[in-house]
Length: 495
Image (tube, rainbow, N blue to C red; front, top):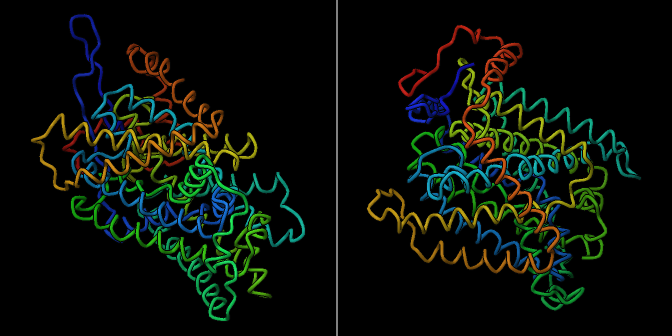
């Protein structure tokens, strides 16, 4: 283990100040293919198997729900173009957090980091892990829901296994991501092909314009906003490549290329998957299903219906790996800037993996799993997601004004961030109006970070013994090097 260089404290006229920054950068091992796999693998997880029900429920009709899916992809494309500019202008790992900290300062960045590390990403990981365990266990419990304890136990085992893999090797983690991204695309392609066959046979009653826009109930503007929030959960992860910018080979070229390839592909796959669902299920059947893909498989695949739960399990397994990989880099970046405990800014000397950060992500997710059901938190998590996206893209406009002469290898048209922010303001405004308690809780949790920031970050004379204890702990688990024999690494260190 080695100290990655969170700001060192030195004495100056009796006061401690952070004046020296010794950093290490993680190995650049992510090429264009792996970059696309990270984006696609993080987006396509459990969302496409959970959100169709929520989108249809709030949209009120089949036709309008399909419009929500297409527009959701379009909004992600606008946001990702803005993030491409930020990613090459501020080439730091950490994504939203790094950009907001650079532009607006430490407090705003810390509030975003606080809500992401402790609530947003652990909850999302817990939802994906529960989806994984439910689909794996579904064949063993065909007539009822899998037992509560069994789903939690299997989810925990999955999280622990993938945490160990990510701690051991960046290459292993990216290879798993590549493999399972291909697997989950094949699973969705199977659904799409079977659905298209059904349509060719004339089974498209629910998709005919007259039936498709027959509203189950008249949607309000607030309900439409909630439909977009449900879809945004399925699209969440589109910005995750920005969390590992420092590990991307030639980021100025590969970051935008990966975005241009991945976002349109995912939008197409999601839309066609939903069309396939409606080729075999009525809106009422889809709303009554707790496992949409399993219901789809039972109706169309007969004796081969077991393929669907296995395919979904593979898809979600890859999603868990991707979220662990990227969210741990967020912890790493936060600690390196002094906004999280110094321990989390350490990487293993030989494997170059942020082991303490990965262990924190793993622990937080397991705690969320033990608390109870997490599916009701999708709207709540999506609200925090969109809030952070909007603040980050508003930062892009502010940064253009603050530093107009700064070199920007990618510079998007101003209409792109402005259009995104208009949509963002409308969506969050009506969501807050429709679900004031859910959205209000998100704001409250973010604001609880204010006293934590002043106590944990501004108070500089904190005990440092936990650092050495953390080194010893990770050495016991991954004993390639004795931490007592290592020295702090600087930018010139050869990793």
